[in-house]
Length: 385
Ligand SMILES: [Zn+2]
Image 1 (cartoon, helix red, strand yellow):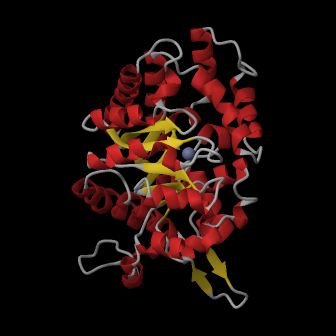
Image 2 (cartoon, protein in one colour; image 1 turned 90 degrees about the vertical axis):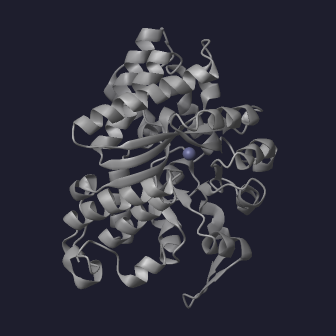
Image 3 (spheres, protein in one colour; image 1 turned 45 degrees about the horizontal axis):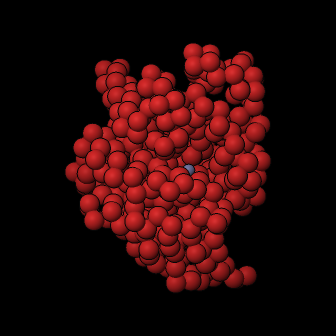
């Protein structure tokens, strides 16, 4: 079986569900925007040094301090033009990395320091996404990018942000999210917002089980009706692996697996924030083996110095993942997207399966082909997506 290289992974049609707009700026853009807006608080105005600063600052192994790095990116994203530019470049960078579908999140309330309204923030980002998507399509690498609107769990505006997300649902916003430090800010503080989303037949994910344990995950699912879990790593606290390799799941872990609740896992980010000591110790290896609905994501490309391709290549190296694993992860993500069912199927059948078939040398084997001759996972894998 061939081992996927990073160059091959870059060409694979990938899906990204958890990526922060303010965590993925190009370093040179941060410098440019700071100059344009008279923002003088950057640690350096040299793009290379700044890139290194962000990555060096990331492995702080503490979520609260990790979040401090966002003061600089958010600080320069305070005008409509700046937001449009950042949104456009985000789409360009994801398309260059071979991403075919992405949900990119941002917190509108963080971009109103210089007088933008929440609506202006959302419209600027969506305009940037649209322009870059159109350009990408003409360049022969079509990508679909949708926005998720995030409310900060430390603030009290979640209901307002949920209403905002619902009102832009036909203009490119695919769902609602809550983010920020977990300890002391339980998901149930935002019940109102989540119930509004649910009553509107709209979509919600929630940062839960990243730095805080099972109660956060339980509340996210059973109180807030979150359809997906942002991170969700601490679900491993409800799983016991015996010395003989036998595994037993607690009731919450069993529920998450039985209901196929997607886990938006962000391995490198988890190492950098201290949620997990090292990539090798990340529960993603175990959760993949146990067939939880695992997806792989970047979280903050700038702060962690990563791309989705490098993240997947890291998992290939750490856990010995094959093309089959990357394909499984990708289809898991597409199936879990807040995107209409028909459109999801069209991307799976029209882009993802053919793209993987072209890259995976084992795709020609009987197990990987269905009767119509198109690439398909082996029967046992197909049952457990
Ligand atoms: Zn996140």
